[in-house]
Structures are given as structure tokens and as C-alpha cells.
Image 1 (cartoon, rainbow, N blue to C red):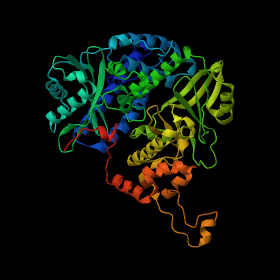
Image 2: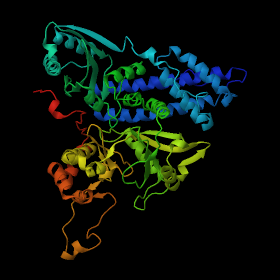
Image 3: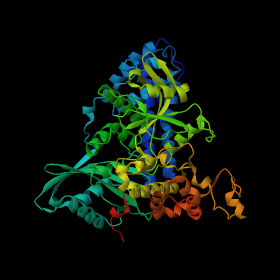
Image 4: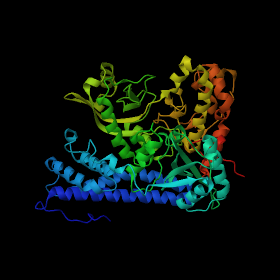
Length: 583
């Protein structure tokens, strides 16, 4: 129970700003305490190999923030005389002062913003009333002596890594620590031959808290050489017999960026210094924004706040216009982008195409389902925004007309701003259909279609059937990975009925306009996939060469059997061929 729980209505003779600031900070502290308890539960779930329990913890944590904001708003409504905007400039100032020595000032500012926005009109959404700009000084949180431990290496790298693993004290013994360390050293020396020189002196910085996600525990750090640093990740797995082992060593920023990709589930990281974690990770992965890194460690609301700040900063130094996104227009969403910024904005249309028999709420529920689920590196994460204001002079005329035509109920003009009442924002990718149509990428078609089929396989293993598997609903990232991003028709694989098409009764059956067999709403006929997906025989051949099994109902039934048996598939964010050899 919080220190504010059970209080009676507060008299107006008491200072309302003090009470409001106190209750908001207490609400935030309670939220973050619960947040950390989820991380601790995830750690224990990893040690116990309780993979389904870990997925349940992830689902619960996704919904934690909004529930805690609601509780805080409810407690504030008990404060008589306090819920007037005129008081809140003082509340913000007082809270800012209280946060000077708070371990999570950045998160508490965002919590304050969320509470304020639940209570007051959008006209107060400016830096006088909320933390549009952060008062938390980044430079005060660049380092934390308890966050990163430094190991100085003088010749004996094996002894140093063994000590490092011992100090981490993950909670289970290693299956064969000496074997794993020798493998890791071999990989380090392959990348940096000078590490084999006995006279070389260098150091290792390691984040002292492990990162947990799905079936893995990740140790994250950097190797500091004389004139450069080498970031690394060591994934640690549980053999489910009470022992741990090192699965591989990832040694460059691009490999790390995939581990922290926007299509992955969030990590569980039990830390009192999330800002320091993010700043350290930024040094290891400079292509990642703070917004993406906050989201990656489970603080997706802070990621959303940071994204908006980064967008405002970008718009201040750019002059291009928001415009309709290229590609085939969606039947449920209208999509636009700012060409100089690597994100897309998706708005639910007022009316859907006739074949989309669904409601607006259904679409929102589907996006929330994806947020709660293990995205296995194949479904794009989104930030959900309300009441987004964009300068009208940065919105192209074509986009204004498009929004007025298909999403009029979601927009309004206020003075010189276009206000969008609801939208989703996600990383921009190249639509797969456009990627395949690009003549400059003809030599990459086979590889990307192999990736496309692998994406469908991994989604299926995570109990996600995409529903609409058309190429336009998948995108290609800068790393060449294929990601799914159209969620309105997704369903659980276990809900589907995968069937073979029965043979025709008569020759005339194949010529008829209607099928000669019954079709229920959840019936799926995989043998039809290739016909609907590819309009070029060459593309179909590439796909079938690697993924013919996806066209067979038996394959899908086999996936269902595994899912119904409670099997959680091994899907790791690195290729099998770099995994360390283990008997």
C-alpha cells in the first residue's frame, strides 16, 4: 500500500501544490517499485526455465503503467481545490525540485505528464505545465559506479572472464565455465588479434545487471583497447537441467542493434538507474536513439516521451513536409511520413474496405495484442499517441486532402496546427513489394524471400498467424530483416483450422466461380498461399525453394501440436551458425 492510500479528502486550507506533487511522486515510486518486481520475477522465471510464465509477466508489465497512472489520478481527485490548471505550474516546479536527487527523474517527469494529460485539455500541453523539455540533466547520469564494473586485464584474459561470470552471480552454476570462457576468448581474438599478445593491457566494462528476455540472459559490456572500444553481448542460456552456458559472443554494433531491435519483446532489467543504462547503451550502439533504448528495456512510455522530444528537435532543424507514405494504400490505415525522419504515422480510417469486416476498436485491440505478445523479432513495435499536434505549414496539401477524405474524425485544425486525435508511430521500412519491384535489388530477391518465409515460420512458432500475408504488409529493415506490420487480421495459430483443398468431385468443379467445398471463417488452405502472394513465377520459385513446407497444411498442424503442448520455440536474435559448439 502506498503512503497516500486510504487518505480522506484533503482540506483546501492545505497547500494544494505540495499535496499534488507529493501524491504524483508517491504514485510514480509505487509504479517503479512494481516495475522492478516484474524484472525480479522474470529473473526467477529464467532460472526456473518457466518460459510460459515469463510471457505472462511480460503481458502484465505492458499494462502496468496505465493502471498506475489511473490510480494516481484517482488519488488526486480527492484533493479539494487542487485540480485547476492554475495550480499546476507550481506543481511542476515543486516536482522538478524534488527530482534533483531522485534516481529516476526522467521517468518521474513522464509519469507527471501522463497524469496531467489525463486531467486537462490539450491547450495546456506546453512546457509551462508539463515536461515537454526535460529538467533532468543528462550529464549527471552519464555514469553510475554501481551500474558498470571495470575489469583491468593484464595478460590473463581467461581468469578475468571467469571472475566476471562469478561476479554476475546469475543464480545457477555454469555447465562448464572453463569451456565457455575458452570459446569466448577464441571469438574475441578472432576479432581483435592483438588480444593474443601477452603484453597487451586493456579493460572490460560490464553492466552489472543482466538483461532477461524469453529464454536468454544477456551480459552486455565493452572491451576498452588502447585506441578504440569493442562492444559485446554474451547470451547465457539455461540448459533446463539446472546449469547455464554461454551460447555465443556478439561483437559489433550492428549485431547488438538487432538484439535491441524494434521488433523484439522488451527486456527485463532490474535497475535503479535506467537513464545511466540508456546512456551507456547509446555508446555501444550509436545508431539507436534513446527512445528506442528506453522502450527496449521495458520503459515504453518513456520511449514514447523521448521520441516526441526527438521529433520536435528534428523538426526544428529540418524543413521537409509530412506526406503520404509510398506504397499500396491500406484498407484499414492511412499512413504518412516525414521523408527526413525514419518513422511512419498510421491513422485508423473512418471507413474500411468492404472486405474488412471489423470495427475501429478491433483494430486497436489487435495492436495492443501485439504489444503484449512476444514479437520474436518479426513484428514492429509501435508507440500509440493521442492528440498529436503538427504544424500545418509542415503538412503537404496532398496529405491534408487524404486525411480529410479517409480519417476526418481523427483530425482537427487548431489555429496553425493539425491535431491528430489518435495514431500509431513505428519505424519506417521498405515495403516488401516495393523492395522486390526495385530493379537495383534484383540480385537480393532470393535472399529477401528466404527471409520473408522465415518471418512467417517464426511468427507461427510464436502462435501468430498474420492473416493477410501479402507482401505489402511486410517491410525490410536496414539490416535486411523482414518484419510484419499489419495487425488487423492476425489470429492465434491455435485458433485456425488448416485444411487441404479436397479433390474436385467433377471436372466442372474446377471451372466453377464458387468452391465445391465448404469454408468456415477460420479455415485456412496453405496450398493457396503461393497463388495469392506472387505474381511472378520466378519469385514463387525462390520462395518455394526454401519454404515449401509453409504451403502444406500438415506443417501448420505440426506447429499447432507444439503450441498446444506448451512448447516455447527457441528463437534467438542471432544466426545459428555463430552459436558456440557445445556437446
